[in-house]
Length: 393
Image 1 (cartoon, rainbow, N blue to C red):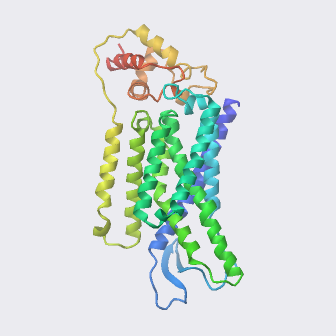
Image 2 (cartoon, rainbow, N blue to C red):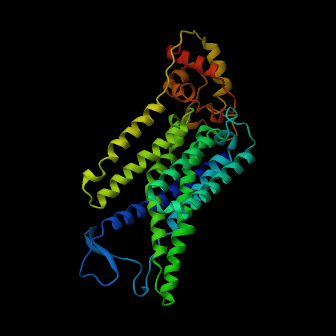
Image 3 (tube, rainbow, N blue to C red):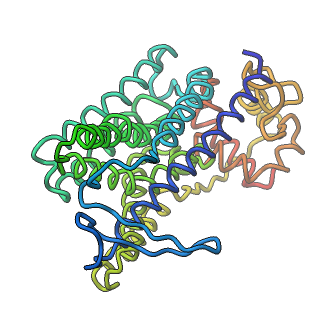
């Protein structure tokens, strides 16, 4: 595929992913807040669970929720589903364009596991599918009736898959796949559970039958799961911009800490929306802060001091072999028509100009070269770091 066309396809998919993702997550936030903020009203019609008055955009809104379903199906019924479907579709499209099409650069790291691109893609699709089926089986089992136990097991499932993928894909590829796994669980919850259960309720109403409350309860459970996963998945989906998250042996632990931080912050917001007394859920704040602090600590760069004197010519040799394949006025890498972020490392002056970034991306982490296609060694990284630490002299 032409690089120019690929870049535009990537950009359009990314833009669409953001737009529909905002719509989906926005509705999740809104409806969970609405559900938690419902209040009983003795004057409400029979079958109404609760109501809420809202003010927004210069107008007042009166919302009622039925315990199961209204006595009769309303003429106009708004469904919230395409936001979820399109978010997954555009996200998977990005996975194809960014990680499958350029598997050698973004998905595979030969220092981790040297596999063929098609094998890596098959593992990718297989883990996304397997993750959903295992999660769904757990939810449908007796464990699904125990919220704390269910949450713990799903947490372990995601962290275990993170650990496994970190031994198969590049750090970048493994981390984005955990975001993709969570996004897949959320979207398939809507497609295979929430919407079908709502359709069953509608069909029962249409047939004049008494709606089965079990369908609504299952749908709500999956909606709550999606709500608690939104904050972690948002961070994981932008992780490729922050190599400190994944370019070290403990990326699986960072995933665990992000899940804890995001889930607990979401819990704080939800309990606030429910009107609970702060002391009843305040315990979540310090634990979230500890988890976030731990993540920052785990990702802190390991600064090594070296008295080794590295000659300019040797540094240029290292950089010309490993960096200027992409970072040059005329890149040789087939995935780039111009230097990424317009950064070129063809001269010592270039290296000095971007010294901090090179130190962070290629010395303190192994994020660069992409996928370590050129097999840059630890010794070469240390020499480059020593030269940069010495002021580039």
